[in-house]
Length: 640
Image (tube, rainbow, N blue to C red; front, side):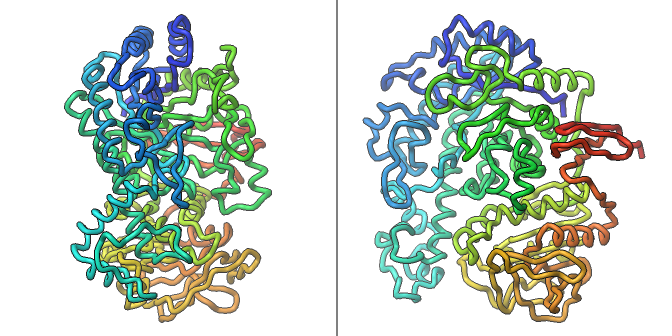
């Protein structure tokens, strides 16, 4: 890995051309290396169908490049021009109620619309032919934020046609589909694929197997849409291709990021720790939410760093880093002074090759007027610019930062998220919240974590956690059972077949572990069950039969954590204290040292340094050192 770099998102089409050179100079003087442009500029590139205007873009790229900045050029397909709807009036996505989602903002297209896909191939090809070998264009971003604004799933006529084709290819006959979906229930059998509708507007809940296949189909459509532009650009450039994923809150797991990432070179994500308010994504209480309102959940951003490092197969950036108050959350507080620096350094410690701030200058018009930038609308410095300069100076002093292998692995599967959304069984059961709770417990113990796809090699990690993996094939179960260190699986592990049926033998059916889920219950708020030795189980509890060794149980004798050797099954959802006990047990079994960190303090180890990040709004002490609120510290690790 080379020295990490900084960048910014810029919109030259928003500003008078006589500002561009001065903007570029100020970016370079601030220590920025990268600038992303173009991702929303289709109407400026092609104001009328077939009438191309790349002159302004030529000049913008040259101006930025002459200042020493490296350009990330975006394909503009997230914002089709108004004239595109004249050519393809049926290209709009439809919401769950079957209503078309209209023009007037962005992301107004259906991934399944073949005509729009071809338009995207055309504009990507034109851009690649013109800029694919440009000396100043060093990377390409495809589209922008797939799935943002709840747009990955469409209930349009185009989606219906494509879904029926997808089902016909998968099942070959309606009879096979009927058997797989269990359509004998409620007389839901089909005689032809043309009879099958989309799983919306049903009187009551649709068949979960129908929903699950539709979720798989919808995800495949995102990957196929992305691949159209990848295939157009690959022959025309040798520069890396990337996409900017969203923060993976409960509404942003609608497509499999691993599948999309398989066609790309770099995974990037858009980091807005305060926009995703902790009461929406965290398993913590109101007091915690208020204490971290200006800093964000101490584990939210790091979780995404580790997830997108996995999606990018080791190569990842932040392409949009929050620099101040945003405009789109229910409330939009300003970050605590120092937080922009902290967020940047935390990304670097997790292996980010680049961190780019959104945006250069705050826009005085249109939808994002209240979204802060590195400059104010009057071009004066905003507070975050000084923090970006400080990080640039510190990077120059510290040099290369090489990520290290984490102590523990956390397995993450997008299909598990779809399954639990399809059949939550409890209104507060979110796969995302469950995995974040497990991840946070590992981090509270001072451990560095790697997030892995379930298909990846686990042998390099001392401990493995696999919460909520609804689908587990025999090969994965065998690999987990054979792992040399402790493995903690569940709750809801292996609870459904790929066709969304309860398997027999009953789950989890893990090799050598005598434990079967005989019954389960979701626990309403306040119905917490105390654990023997401290902590509680809340939200979810499974009734277990079997003779596996009990490690943790409720005070009335119900097993919550059971084991056979290193293989463990977690039969409930622990609260914070309960998760700490689960992680402490696993770490002790793995021979890992855990730390009693002050609230809000987090560590990340690299090959050469240990980084500390204080998310708390007050100073904390560690090993004789005071780390200020929103402070960052690092020290060299002793050589072995």
